[in-house]
Image 1 (tube, rainbow, N blue to C red):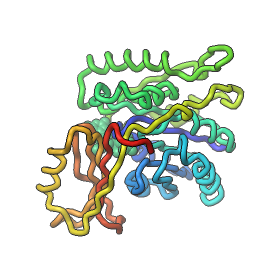
Image 2 (tube, rainbow, N blue to C red; image 1 turned 90 degrees about the vertical axis):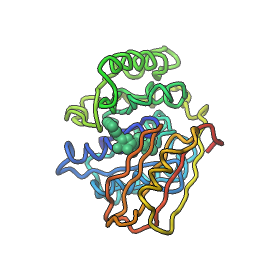
Image 3 (cartoon, rainbow, N blue to C red; image 1 turned 30 degrees about the vertical axis):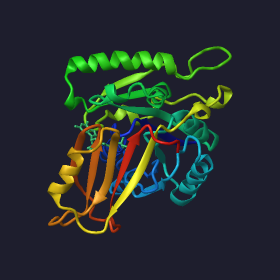
Image 4 (cartoon, rainbow, N blue to C red; image 1 turned 90 degrees about the horizontal axis):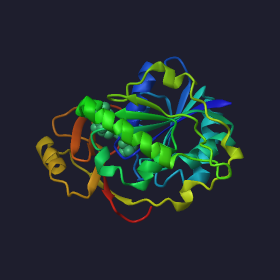
Length: 302
Ligand SMILES: Nc1nc2c(ncn2[C@@H]2O[C@H](COP(=O)(O)OP(=O)(O)OP(=O)(O)O)[C@@H](O)[C@H]2O)c(=O)[nH]1
């Protein structure tokens, strides 16, 4: 059985950051393959992850928990044949629910060693009523309260209580017995996805889910976000980019992309989530054109 971890969590919560950190701190020396899914036609996370993992497969334009189901299974088979990994990491898009992904992985001979839901401590209040965010918490056995550098300890305590309540309500159950499929929830508090080694040591292995017949939440799942990609043929002025990020319409909840900036040697990653932005990490290997992906709340179904 191939050990697999699923990383889920709402848009911009810090999934890619966590995986980049895990590569540096916990997977040295192991053959690790990563499968990453984004809702948009242009992937950013895959390019960021390629900087630290050599085997990255991107599934863009669609959602692995519903429309991309077949591609997901094909992607996993391809990864196994091509890279023969010792560990598989799956980063779902911020708009996906983890349960169907877990079922697929198990049916393909993976043992799920943890479903990690990343929660954005700073912005949880702004997205906590989205049903997808609730199913992501309920479909996990490890919740990582991330961005704790941006909130105080009291807020973290409140959040942890709230998350546990949501987990109780939304956790996946055996429809016949009402029993919870995950017998426990483990909560960590982190900054920039820093986790203890135990998370990746196989101590959170899940049961075989195929014996449960609960219909997958994907059947009711709708994407209440829409995305638009803008390409920039010329390098951007730094100040103009900052201006743009500071003056986005309120319904834009997430922006990310890779852009070239005038007078900077390498392309850089641009990140914006619920009002917080950052222009920074360089991607020297990126050869494509500059682009930004804008994700809006309340858009059409994907
Ligand atoms: N202050 C702070 N910022 C963080 C932390 N973790 C991540 N970020 C920032 O949050 C932004 C989004 O992080 P990502 O790791 O790209 O989030 P994601 O969940 O992969 O995003 P999507 O794939 O679009 O859903 C980036 O600007 C990160 O640098 C943290 O603990 N503290």
